Image 1 (cartoon, rainbow, N blue to C red):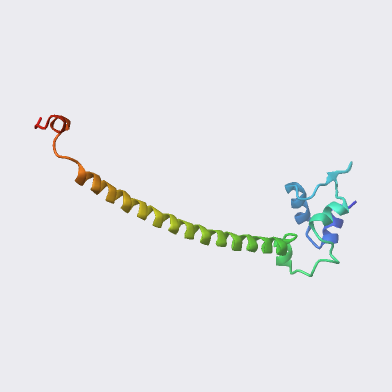
Image 2: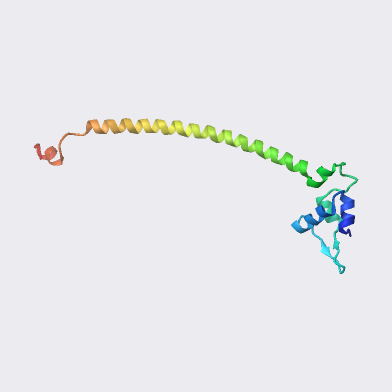
Length: 133
């Protein structure tokens, strides 16, 4: 089992980074009878790679880097590209719908003009009895 200090050394991170990971729930750990954190190495390295496998980082990168950051970035870039494709398709569909709407509108206006022009003059009684009401 690792303590905060040995976990930090094993991953090349600061103790505070490991503690933040525990408190945020990224890593599960328990306190022993002395109040020290006990971290299972498998649990620690599930989130953070061992220092031998991790590339050297500058202190600024070490403070701000997260595990699997490159994987997450690649995944997000793929999702962005996919969403851009969907947006293009939706714009094309919207344009098609607008064209259809314009065609239907012009047909409806033409039908309305025909109905208005074909409407007989006078009321119902004049049409039935042939006189003005």
